[in-house]
Image (cartoon, rainbow, N blue to C red; front, top):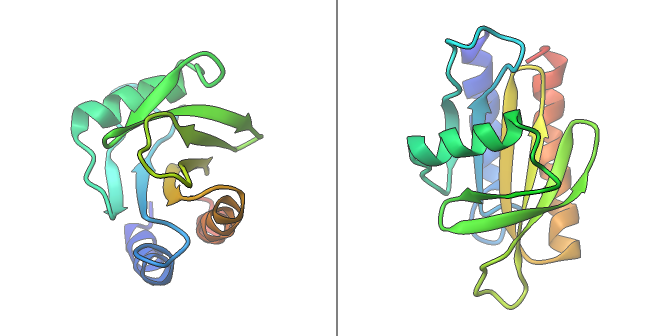
Length: 146
């Protein structure tokens, strides 16, 4: 694993994409290899705009591993999400308990070695901008087979 590349790529990507008036309000990069030995625990490699505790992370990873995308919801931070669309290596979800009139959403993308969880505020237009940002970072990781 080229951790130097991952950290440098994250720093370069996060600054223009995460924060107020940017496509994403928060993002988490989780090392995740479902084909690896079970003793390898998934950990947060990078996070910006949110702090996720280890119990939440464990529950989220179980949600992914058990492939419960269509039948259950998941929690990230204070919000509960339900999956709205599933694709080959990513899925979208909407927040069920938002207090924001425009809504909140999440995009979860799986690369060879990571899960990228991106959170955004808003609806369709915001989701499109968020997807572009997520896809840019995932492309960088995929180029390095990460």
